[in-house]
Length: 200
Image (cartoon, rainbow, N blue to C red; front, side, top):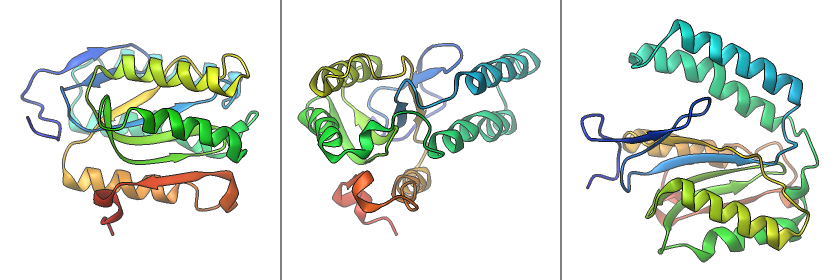
């Protein structure tokens, strides 16, 4: 099976506001965040605009519609995350270590990690899933929250994108690398595989 998304092959899809797609062991770029990392007023406004846009643009989308969706909605969420709202408990290296241990515990069994960054209030992952992604995410969130010991810290959902080709892979690696560029060194953790590290 190809490591990149093939639109001609069957794709498992679920979810509504944040649709989740998985095509076997095709690589994924995943973002998940702390529950308090987004102001609720902004989230309500965002959801209302997404709903209106989807009503005016029913699926299946053209490439142009998909591009417009991501420009108007996906990347807006990313910009809000980078503003550093909420408790930002991952700025603490002791807390980040618990996330690192959770992720790497499943390396080679439930996932192959290519690159990830733990930011103060969210996590970006580039991985190859070796099991259903919803189950992997549920496990990582549950295990890490129990290890951290501060109660239910995670937002319920997550965002995922199938990797289309080698250029998309390289762009995802660069995005992960650049995401913490303006942060103090001790407030984030960046990890890369040899393959990801070779991306210029």
